[in-house]
Image (cartoon, rainbow, N blue to C red; front, side, top):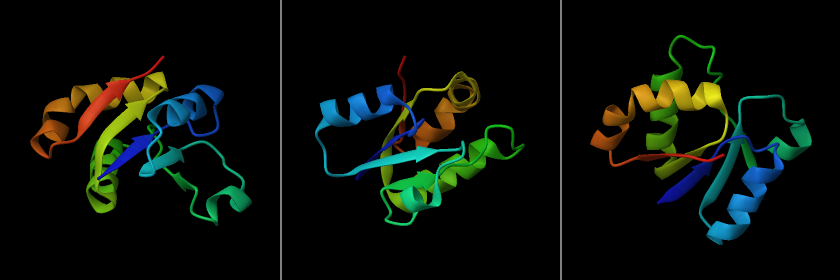
Amino acid sequence: MSILITAANSAPAYKLKKLLNNDNVIMGDHMDLPDFMLKPGKLIRLPDPKSTSYTHEMLTLCLDMGVETVYLFRQAEVDLLLESETLFNEYNIKILVEK
């Protein structure tokens, strides 16, 4: 199973990745990422929290990629996904907030 870390274009996200020391870490961001970073598969583009279906898009992405833990860094993501934490828990996906 994989771990998803959001805010991939931020230093705290990379610090967490290094601390986790896990080969199954996926870095993602909904903000603009250069194409050269996306093409090698090192980073993925996440759904935008402004989307009305953001929660369902994130759940689908987690299920499709076998994500069991999501580390959130941005407040917009935190606000929306914590409202749906019960739904994610039903699929054994943990939502964790990082600061």
